[in-house]
Length: 213
Image (cartoon, rainbow, N blue to C red; front, side):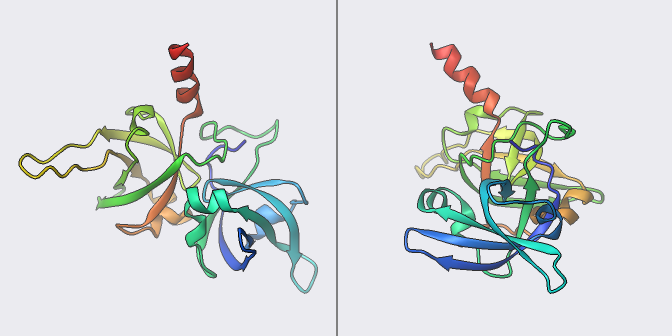
């Protein structure tokens, strides 16, 4: 389990093609400092299991390797990563961790696309499209995880069909990003059209299932 509070901006060092999977190596000295084989690290919101760690010439751990299976490559944006790409990193929570964000599983529900960015003097409003059906789990001032970042939903649009054209716009939501988020996460780098990983609040999914029983 994670909190959605990004600890470090890491860098993809390599991707080894294994046919139906890839072996991903990421440099992130902070999250690797106490990592061991079998530990969980969130990479852009995807919970990955550490296979091994790498060290600098003086023996300081600074990178980790994880296997990414085909299903994850298809359902998330990790399949589009390339060496040099920046990624959001967070270690799994411990019993003594402050839950500064919200409950994040690291199980990506789907991907969305950055629709537009509206800058202001001290913050920036970002709109992200969401696949139809996923927007029902979003409410204003509720929680959403975008590329592993715990964010508060500002508004939700259910999409619409332009009269006379038959073309429909996708549902979307907006989030406000403070300078700290822009400087310490990949959302400061994302451009219009970029794909992001989305995980809705798991509590909403459980509530929906219970109501249907």
